Every structure is written in structure tokens, then in C-alpha cells.
Length: 85
Length: 422
Image (tube, rainbow over all chains, first blue to last red; front, side, top):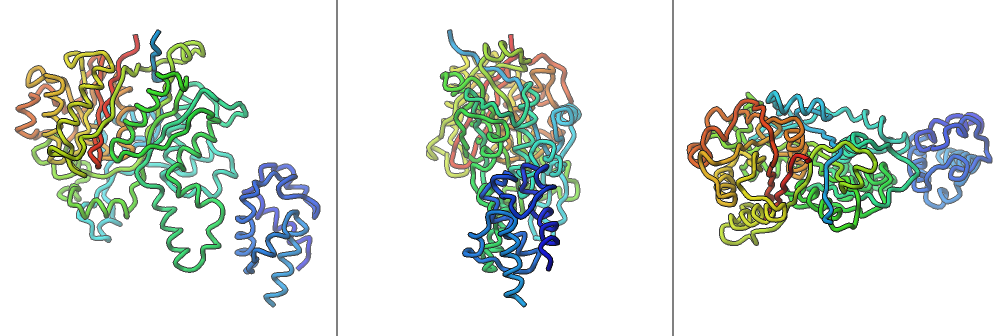
């Protein structure tokens, strides 16, 4: 799956947790979830659970620790989708 | 000079009205909020009637940020947020400011944390899916969930307390807030209580055989406090909230004042001398009422209205007897008494706060709400209180002093005295 497609889909996954809505429209791979989007760090687990459900994957705790910006989130999703196939 | 404490804001989620205007209209017109519950029939409960507020959960989007709203599931916290935020706005304040109100605290109580949220946890954990619970579950399982949400939304920075004293919880919360202001610990408090009756709590009471089971076909007739055909109580859900503040603080900010809190008391009968886990020791109740009057510096003669606990069980007679003894008033001399539970059932921990909102409205607007379903008063109660004290229709009447009490499992009592603000 194309990284840009996942990035667009991630906007929807992140939306309910994002305080800074304006920043959400212009996210790129460098966008930090907590710094730029002002997502409460406690909510990262909810985003992971939502992403697991959306892509039918399982993101273990080691993989989850790598997630800090949009790019690393896409990396982990792609990696887990690949493992599944 | 002694600090005086006044009521400046009200909010309510009641089975017979959500929001103060709807609730005021309902209690003046004797509107029942009790409904037949098809689910409870399926579950083989004896009682199949419940007090359910017409609460639109999505209305919370008008109060909470999208991030906070998303992931909030439980009705019990939802009721508390709605009631407390409405009271706060009614008192002339705004929500979610960056300014922290260091002089304002919150006492809000409940009986059990959200059983809807708890059920989901139990199911997922048992299915070995605990990892899917997410970050928003714990805050909704904690007993302090309601105070946590409310204090964050209102930016409160003084003491934040979650109290629990079964059916005395609501009155006790108001008393605690009053005492903190009186002592000078806070200038303003948001006080109240909330309760959600799901099938698990309901079923547990049903098994005790203390619920009304004879009026499943006519739910609005099921809750019959003080009636000869009283046959047990009807559980209900909801929340009530008040903003209370020190008089000078209220005057300085130009708040409108609804009523004054003169005093109160909370105690226990020690589960002795007739008292038990589930029954009150009469001495405890009488002491509680008398001490409340003393603290309020008024005599029993001055009470214009009793808003009783009066749940529609065998205990109603005992309660009227205790009021008569504590106030030193019987028969023709007994003050007018009413029970909101005739319309909304018994909202357990939320009962006290919803009923206190009704007390304040009766003082503000000069009326006594009817006791519905009291066409056949219990002969013993009639003998103690006399017919005139048991109104079945709305009475327009100036209420200067109202006494309110609630009594809970564990033999805990709470009594509050309110007056018109002069």
C-alpha cells in the first residue's frame, strides 16, 4: 500500500484525538503526534488500537514504542501488514 | 462575621425532566418519569419499572471538547457532566477557561462507578482482549470519574472530593461543600451526585425484594411514598448539581441568589437500637435532624416544608414518626411534607441532589410540589401528620424554611436546612 494513501487514512484515525485540528490538514511524515498535533500521549495507545482494527494487524509493544511521528506510524503499519501476508 | 453560604446555580438530569426548566414544569405538574422496561421483563425481574432520564448523550458535545467526548461511554459520568456544567453556566460562569479557579472546589458523589464501562472491561478481559481496552477506561471506572471530568471541565483548583454514603450521598455532598465554604477552605463549591441504574445494580435490589412489583402495567403509579398501597421503591437514574458560594463572594461578582443554606448534619445510628445495615436507628435520624436545626439556628416550629427521603417502603411511617419527634410537631401542627420519589422513583446516590434542586425551586418559586399516587395515604401516617400535610395537588405557598433529609444503607443520615435568601 502506498505511503500517501495511509497518510490520508491516518488523518481520519488521528482526528478524534487531535486538539490542533488545523495542523491535521497539512500533516506530513515529519509531523509529531504529541508536539505538532497536541495529542495527549496517553491517547497513543488508542490510536494504535484504532489502527490495528482498521488494518487488521497487531502492533506489539516494541513496535508501538517506535511511533512518534506520522512517518514512523506509517512504517509500523506497513511492516505489520507485510508480516501478516 | 460568620460566613453565609448561598445557592447560585442549579443543574439537573431527572427521570421527569432534563434541565431546570423541564424539571420545574414536571414537578409543578406532577409528571412521572417512570417507565416500563421490556429488558427487565426479559431478565425476570420482579420490578420492571425504572426512572430513566430522557438524556441525549450527544448533547455532551455541547460541553466537552471533541477529544474528551470521543471515548466517553458511561451514562453515569455523562449525567454528572450535564448537571454540573448546567449549574455552573446557570451561576453565570463559562466552561473550560484557562484560568484556574483556586477558590472553587467540587464534592460529587455516586454509589457505584459506571457499570456499563465495567461490563465492557469484564467482557474484554475474559475474552483475553485486555489490550483492546485503551486509555480511556480507567478514568471511567474510578469512583472519582465524575469529579475528575467535572473539575477539569470547570477548571476547579480547590478541594475535589468524591463522597459515597449510599442514598445519603447527595445530601452529604451538599453539606460537605457547605462546610468547606463555611470554614473558609473554599469560596465556592460545585456539589451534587449522580447515579446510573443498569440491570446489574437494579437486579441486586430486585433480589432484596424491596422494589415495587405490583404496578408493572401502570409505571407512573408504581412509586407510592406514604401510601397505604406503597409496595417498595422504584430505582431511578440521574444527577443533580448546585453551585454554592460564600455570600460576599457571590454579591461581589453580581451572582443571582436562589436560596441560603442555613446548616445541616450527617451522622450514623451505629447500626444499633433498631438500626442495621439496611434500616435506620430512629435515634440517629432524630439526632441528625435536631443537630441540623441547631446548626441552622432555627426551631422545629419554623419549618414550612419537609422534603422527605420517603421511598415508598415500610420505612416511610418510621420516617414521619422521626420527623414528628425531632421537630416536636404532630397532626394539625405537622408541616407540609412531600416526596419527589413519587414522580421519579429513588435515584439512590443521585436522590439527594436531585431532590435538593427541587427544594431550591420550591423556595424560589413559592410552591409545594404534589405527592402523586397519594390518593390513599397510610392510616398511620395520616394519624401522625394529618391530611393537610400530605398534598396531592400543587400548592402555591411561600416557603421560608425547608428541611431535607436522606437516609442510606449503612445507617447513614444527612439532613440539610434551606431558607429563602433575605
